[in-house]
Amino acid sequence: MEFSIATLLAQFVDDKLVAGKNLEKKLGCEDEESTHKLQITLDALEKINVLVKERGKYRRIYEDQVVEAKLRCSSKGFCFAIQEEESADDIYVRESHLSNAWNGDRVFVKIIKEGSRRRSPEGEVKLILERSNPSLLATVIENEAKYKAVPLDDRLLFELDLKEKEADLKAALEHLVHVSVLRYPLGQLPPLGKVTKVLGSDAEEAADVDIVSCKHDLPLEFPEKAIKATSTLPGARIPAAEIKNRHDLRDKLTFTIESEFNLENSPWIENAFTLEQTSLGEWQLGVHIADVAHYIEQDTILDRIARKRGVAVNLRKQVLPLFPEKVSKLCSLIPGRSRLTISVMLTIDSQGNTSEYQIIPTVISVDHQLTYQETQELISDEKKPGKKLASLLPALKDLFFTISPLVKAQRLQRGGLEVTTPENHSLFKDEGRVGAILGVASLPVHSMLTELTILAGKAVAEHLQALELPGIYCTQAEPDVEELEDLIKLGSNLGLAIDLNVEERVSSQDYQRLIEQFDTSSAVMVLNYLLQSTFKPVKYLTKPGKHFGLAYEEGYTHCISPGQRYIDLIIQRILKAVFEHGRDRVTAEPKKE
Image (cartoon, rainbow, N blue to C red; front, side, top):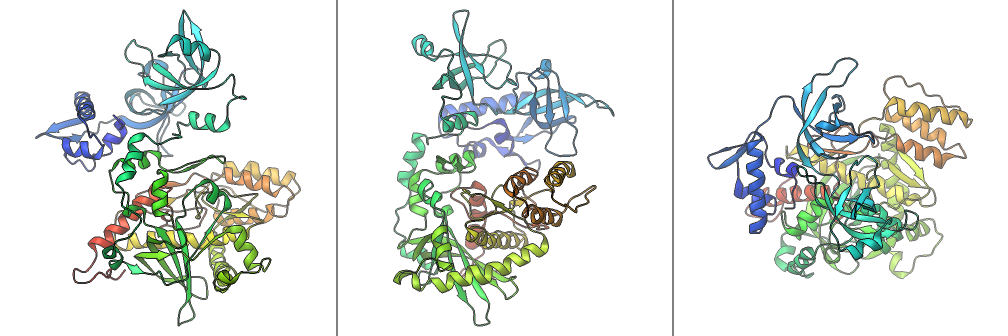
């Protein structure tokens, strides 16, 4: 069974009845065993009054005094259930009321004692929705002639029985190991685990990648069924009928710009660019995005695995991708090959504003593939372009010397942030998880290109809002004042004359001024690193909201990396649904957008 209770309950919305067959399809129950397990789960949820069965279908029941939360436990045994809403109270849960839930688990908590001014409300775990520890790091010990695993995390107050041949476990005794959980605590039965990898005699001996991937349960390999599923993907040759239904842009001068790190470690090239000047003296910038949704259908094996992974993970020495390599080879925008794309065509005026945009299905062919370093050398006249690149140089200079500075001026005016870092190994060309543009002192083109890719996310979000379509929006709350006070004190102690008076709230303009003052310090990189730590995490919501780092009041989303970020793939599917269902039946042209 590859789904959690949380995933199952997510299928129930707006008090609607849902058929069991529909749940089987949505949750990927493709064989008799998984279907049987689903039915057992549905029966159990019905018995504890989480679901009700009516006319052969199921409906969600919402109970008063029962809230969804995530457990945060201490090494002393007690826990607090943290609700998602920031203003909601944390709920105290005694060890005796955990019902075998572990630190980090997502649970339903029933409030059994109301809180007061000095005390938090108290609750008990009613249902474990999702386990956060399918595997863990542990040390193997021998206790009463049995081998057991003691978790390295002291908030996990238990030992796991180990299922393994005695000879194999003897070799792992007193070693750091990765343990997969085969059975969580059940009644009087302790948890049961299996050693999947011996990492070393201690943490220092173990490889960094192994420790990180094991600690966070990051899969290093794809299951065999995923590799097998890639064999059913279409070939690289694009049918003529598909090209006919798209805007053919293969005659336009098209280029990609990638970091050397990405080219060496991540096979994905998801974005290409075109630039032309209009008859009115404006510029039309094309941001072309690999059409991954054309090849990865919803609810297929590859889609479900990507959904579970969520995002490609950069471990510096290794990138853990969202899809098997064959998908990237099929979709990546490599020179000399026709590729299917979704294009955001942005018209930028002389002030750096997006005066209009168009989002269309396209087919492109990349002419030039550059690295950030090569691009920086070309536009700075440090490197003479060869014959092939001579025709591209004017467009590059227009892009980085004219358009990007104008767009940056607009971003600065509204308060958007840029933080200088020693290096940037992000897999994405937008602001990513940080929520602000990251500038690399030695490669200004990096942040200059990010200025432009962010415009694509803004245009797509506005498009979804204008058409009143469901969407997923990228938001970021403002930082807490308390987080900033310590940093201001540190800057003052380093001799900076910081003129910033914050009492209750901070604005992005406040952060702009801080960044400018930090730039005058010899410890600028340290200060900028600490400044980033005060940012609130980026959140995805179904309603548009404020994005602090980019200083957007509402309406921004991620869309340019559908092969490495699952949210972007969802957005791409929504756009493709518009193309398909919003077209005129007589013509292949999209309706006016």
